[in-house]
Image 1 (cartoon, rainbow, N blue to C red):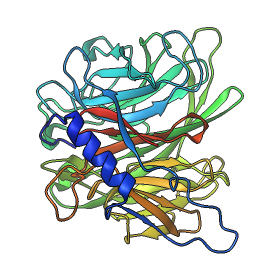
Image 2: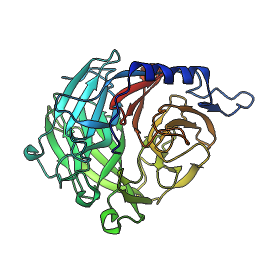
Image 3: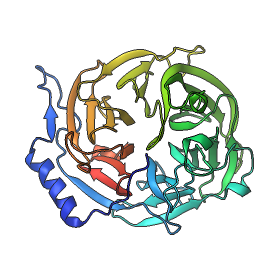
Length: 382
């Protein structure tokens, strides 16, 4: 989402940290039943700024966030890879950079993608979204939902870009249902990888500014190529559809965002306009479209959920676009904890303003990384 860029000083970060530590009306938890384990985020009470995500070309609006699972080429295990959606003029859907951030705050540009030099089709060009993952062998997959001028009227279908471990785009995945890839998650078994991708442009521009129930979830099956060849796209299956999506003057587009694969093979989807979390069962193996799936949790502490990740205990973590909170929900749908991450914005309600998109669990469960695209930085809840 595009919001005014406001620098945050150390005093403001300290104030936010103090509010979280003292629990001054910013944290909530549901009492656990007998024998119930505590929520994953319960021990965490501090938000620390890790680093600015603005690279040398001035790109802003960090969206995608993923912890690098293993070192390969220029990628370093345990660092966080972040994609930028806007250019230096704050035009949405025009960001072209990926930055790599170490836990200690060192920032390196991993890639700057030239829209005119792509190896394949990517309708509309490059505007890097929340859809970001790192596959075995150091292959990076990132979504593109591009515009020509930062407005919803010029949004085009985009693609998935596949980069090697040195940050070079080696392949594009376009068409076959890919239409505004907004977020994704992945799972790999041997030489096969499944990508689960949300799409938000199915009829959205034509219906603007009205809601259209065209958002989809696709499963793309890839096979690892021989040697240094990029993964081969095998087939695509639509496993979810009917999610609400619409254009937005401030947010460019709103639709199904975060996705995460649970331990039992259920794919959890943050249905942003529905203000809920849904689940699609047998996500890795199903050969049919389950629509919006089964509703897991709705409203209460949820407030326009955007980014989604699965906690080590199997709970679902989502971040609110409406009020800046992270919410933890168990697989049965019980919201077990929430915590304020972003206090920016004029209350009531407390800030947020759609600044929270990508999030990822830190190695060994030591916290949760999240991007604050209102401040253009990577933060850690710990």
